Amino acid sequence: MKNILLIDAHPDDTRFSSALLAAYKKGAEETGFKLSTLTIRDLRFELNLKYGYAQRVELEPDLLAAIDALKACDHMVWFHPVWWGGLPALIKGFIDRTFLPSIMFDYNPAKLGGMGWDGYLEGKTGRIIATMDTPSILYRLLYSAPSVNQLRKTTLEFCGVKPVKVTQFAPVKDSKPETRDRWIENVYRLGLKGA
Image (cartoon, rainbow, N blue to C red):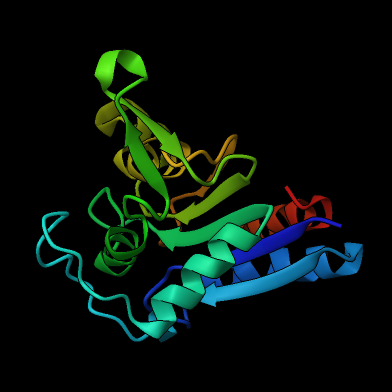
């Protein structure tokens, strides 16, 4: 049975993302998938990648456990809001500190004319479930979906996770209860399929 890692990347556990995660979890449990949850806001770690890649900063125990969870799963589902068109600082800091060379990828000069790399998360699949207040069509057409590009293309796919599907719910602000119920039902069905 598929091993699914649910990644709660919202800084606030009282927001709509929590209801979506609970719906996915319920569906996946009913099917019998093996589940684990990584709640980034509960981890103790320094958000800032202080020296970039020039000097390695010792990884905190919570980050080491998170890396193990990411490597152990078959499918990862990221739940996060979109703020100012991008990822919240919490998720960005988590990625900066965990998606490191020799851990999630390595550069490979034998590929792409010396500009290649090897992703160490190959064989895994992913899904991003994002909430935002900008209508999805405007987010794509006016802004080219920067949070999707950052998390899916330049992070997860770069490290070998493929395919990475994206589900966006918007606008959340002022959405009607029946709309939110429909969104929750959609995510529950994704959980049933482990998609």
